[in-house]
Length: 223
Length: 264
Image (cartoon, rainbow over all chains, first blue to last red; front, side, top):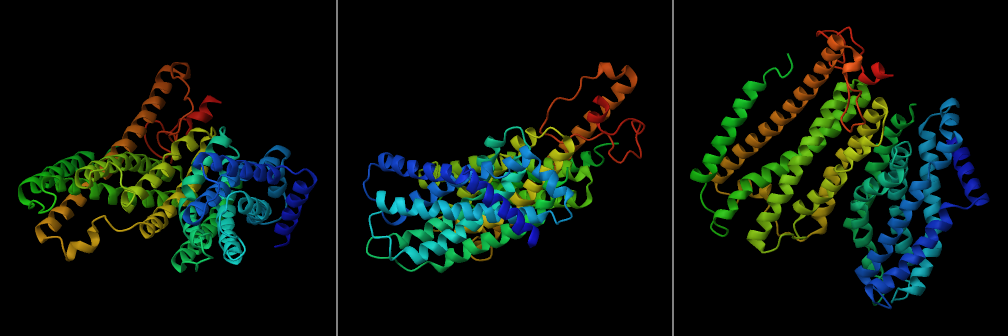
């Protein structure tokens, strides 16, 4: 646990001293809301449409962060450092997934507020507790799958092309579940109850891919 | 040498396919609602089942590769996924034709099989670009196996999620095999699954035999004509092994195992 915390601290410190991924993801999200406003020709969205706009935007924003996740390791020899240190290699996976989770949470604090101001019709306050739960589960899915795909793509020739084309189809079940969960929360006339079925699907997705990614991550760090 | 048993397998596949098509057209009763077009069911559904099983199998083979470090398992996983992609396209096309004939649209979002098929296709279609963008053959095999393990686990999960998300228009094959489907249709359907599975196995065996023969031929040419006569291997998405990765037998046993090693 200690090496993971040290690596996580390093990533957060890097992002604080030279903010790179978080501001880019944030600007991208807000720009996408503006694009949706004109693309859909609507001043306000609610229900399933609002859920779709919000979740898809966050998904695409996450791709930016996933692309950048291992760049400093690759360029500055961080991989060698981890391999040379007497620590478990999965410490890097845990640290990077946690870092991505934190970045996404930071982005969402501002992006969801911007979404509520710019596009959302109904009041966001009653939906907030449910939305926090849904976004936390979604972030977990994005962090786990994103870290693995990022590590997979970092040493390929076409890194920026490989990340989205692998990550987006892999995340389709998470998107389906998150969008179905968020729809009743953002519906007109107050937040509805969370559908348990979709909560179970999203939690199962997090569990299966979390364990799998943890198991196979070692093989990406062997050279 | 390579391709042992290919002839027997080819004959068995040919016989099974011929028998299945004969059964489909002359034995299975016409569907009361859909009429003749329902016969595409005997191609579409077996192809779909074989494809999904093959993707999971590809994931298992890749896991064996990661565990044993034997690159022949990577070759098997590659071939299984490659042929499954072709079957996947056939499944999408036959599904679209059936949807057009019975519901009047080429694409129906209410049909979980078709939709999850498209998602799975989009995911596995990235397998070859991923391989192609990694030059080192050993790393290519390892990374591709990691991908295949994740994607193999993704198939059933995705299927469940998409099925849960859609209204049920699609005929439930498994549910109705005992109940609604007449026993004549059920038997023909089982025969069709066996025939399509045999076809899949046959195509995999042919591709593996073809690859091994090509490597053997390269090795022999290099030995007879010298290394200048054999053009170096370019970048490829396909796994590259020596003619015999165990190095134990065959006329090329004394040669370098890996063409890339020989080139460097």
